[in-house]
Image (cartoon, rainbow, N blue to C red):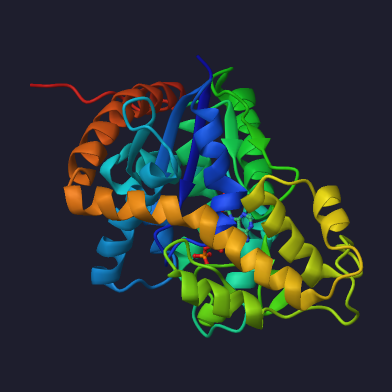
Amino acid sequence: MKKVLSGIQPSGSLTLGNYIGAMKNFVKLQEEYECYFMVVDLHAVTVPQEPASLREQSEAVAALFIAAGIDPARSNVYLQSHVPQHAELCWLMTTLTSMGELERMTQFKDKSSGKDTVGAGLFVYPALMAADILVYNADLVPVGEDQKQHLELTRDLAGRFNHRYGEFFTIPEPYIPKVGARIMSLDDGTKKMSKSNPNAGSYIALLDPPDVIRKKISRATTDSGREVVYDPANKPEISNLMSIYAECSGLSLAEITGRYEGQMYGGFKKDLAEVVVAALEPLQERYHEIRSSGAITDILASGAERARAVASVTLQGVKDRMGFLPPRSK
Ligand code: AQP
């Protein structure tokens, strides 16, 4: 069975962008693949996290995975920090990665811009992401558009290792949705929706109550003009809202355009809010059931156990090829 790997950082409350760009596809792919879905807590600490909030968000992200439809009996759901092989392989990956490659990463440029000090962890983030994927020899990686560059680097590193030490790693393929691969911020159609944006009005959190969702959508920035047409280059803001509508309702962009022909933004936004509320209601209900059941601890323990079993074999293979002596008992 081919393997799928993906992860989400517990760096804030998950957004509709994380759901549409990544999680929705996790659920689809588990039908056909052996899946590894991680809460990437080691990635989250590449920018400062408050310990209590990291603990809470780690469990919340895992519960949202299950609430969204990931079946823990079929897919491995776990915390990245519970599988130490990720961090060890990351170190080995940094030795194959050049400074120039890391300096070119747009996520690093975005997250470090304007900061007085930037942690080295943020710089080597892509090497950890490569280790995450390669430690399971994943075939497919479902991500949003923003992660494409990191995935390309992973492919380069896998190829470099294979060239230097002999064929070993599978070269992973990205799996990027056609619509919704880049959901934009509600206050600025040129920036992606992000859970760590300090302005909570810029994103819809998956756990936002209905009235908060309605308020955020009614205040979302819209382009000048008033036609509901999909034209990302000239009308990025209304096009973004249409993508959200399409992903939450199951309607195509053409159907939405037809439905709102000749109508103003106001009516469209009102309907969009109801579409989003209806899409998130069942997920929120399941989330609260899972959190109150206390089942997450066991789910994470068995997911990590299965993941460690696979990751330790790969890591040993990498170390053998690179020339590390195995530990001997006396
Ligand atoms: N706006 C988005 N549109 C589509 N996909 C998105 N993803 C994130 N934002 C959007 C996808 O969600 C997955 C998990 O992302 P992550 O949490 O690991 O990191 P990120 O990409 O940096 O997401 P955020 O929300 O912007 O987090 P912060 O603010 O902490 O940096 C990835 O597959 C990503 O593509």
